[in-house]
Length: 226
View 1 (cartoon, one colour):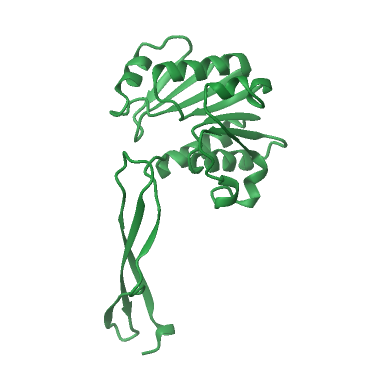
View 2: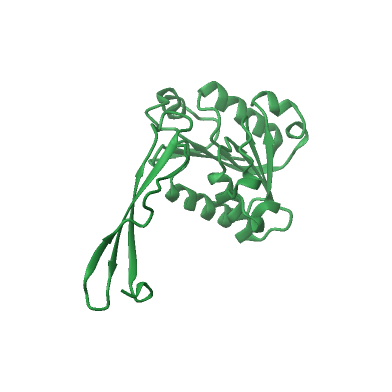
C-alpha cells in the first residue's frame, strides 16, 4: 500500500487533570484511519507503542475568551496594559497579539505573576510579539510598591486574573486608580465563577465606575475608569 497516496485522519482524545489542581499531566490517545484511493479504510495506531504525556494545567482562559481579548485590545488600541495572573501566558499572548494587530509603536503589556513560567522561552510568546511583553515576577499586592510597578504610569487597559477575592480586586483597582491614564478599560475574569461566589456578590454591588457583567465561561466584568 502506498502511504503517500492515503490520507491519515486522526482523532485525539485528551485526559485532563483535575481542573481544581495546579499542574498535572495530560495524556493523549490517538485514533487514526487511513483511506486508500479504492475507498478501503484501515484503523491505524500512529504512535504505537508511545503515549504522549505533557505538563498541563486547567487554570487558564478558554479559546473563545482569548479571541475576545485579541479583538478588544485591537479595537481599543491601548498603549500600556496591566495584566495580573500571567500563569502560562495564554491571555498574555492574546493581549500581545491585539497590540501587534493595532501596530501602536511602543505599546506594551506588563504582566505579573508570582510564578515564573518563562513565557518568553516556553513558546507561549513567540518572537514576533515578544517586544510587546514585559513579565514581572512577584506577589501582588507587595509588587505594586516595588520596581518596576511602583513607577509605571499610564495604564489604559488592564486584565485582572490574579487575586480572586474582593479584597485583592480592590487593591488591584486602587493601584490602577493611581497609575492609570485618563481612561482605563478594566477586564476582570472569574466574576461569576462558582468557585469564588464572594466575587460575584462584590460586583453585584459595585458602583464606583460603570461596569457590566458578561456570562463567559467563568464570568467577566468590564469596568470603564474615567
